[in-house]
Image (cartoon, rainbow, N blue to C red; front, top):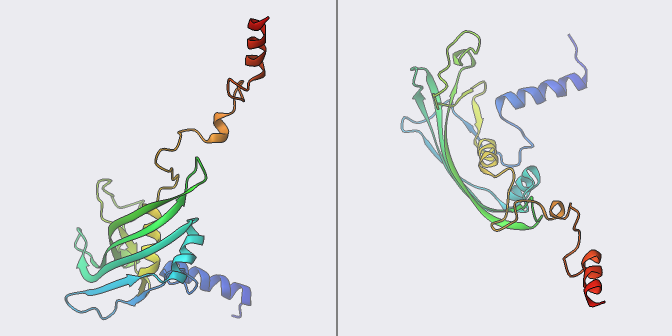
Length: 203
């Protein structure tokens, strides 16, 4: 059965999304996990200036520097005893975000760590049939490709670590524009009603 070029492109994009391998990702570090050593594999990651600039555009940052990470990828088992590929990662970065109050850029330091278990899709809990413990902090993801893009994984977790409503230290609770929404739009000295009151007292 023949497919149109558009249908093929859509299918490829869907497969890339599921497999977490995206050739256009801002920070791509694919790792083949089919032949991991018994002690696991240590993977250091240092984002280049070009990659940092691309991540800035993706996440709406004013700047991003010193984005580095260390990951350990190893064979493991989940709490239920299911065979899995465990990815433990830690990262840090220096960024500049735009304050939602003052619209000024300010420096932030971002750091976090995570644990993810990649299992076969058939081993994922069935939301309809399997009981899922809400207190279970074990993060499971489907492994449907021999490769895991560790760079994209880091980018996603950095996004989670960023404040979605960044506010510069010392900024007002209300935006400056909203603070002027009221009957007194000018300082007391410049308010025309205050000036009339002063003239009345002088008469």
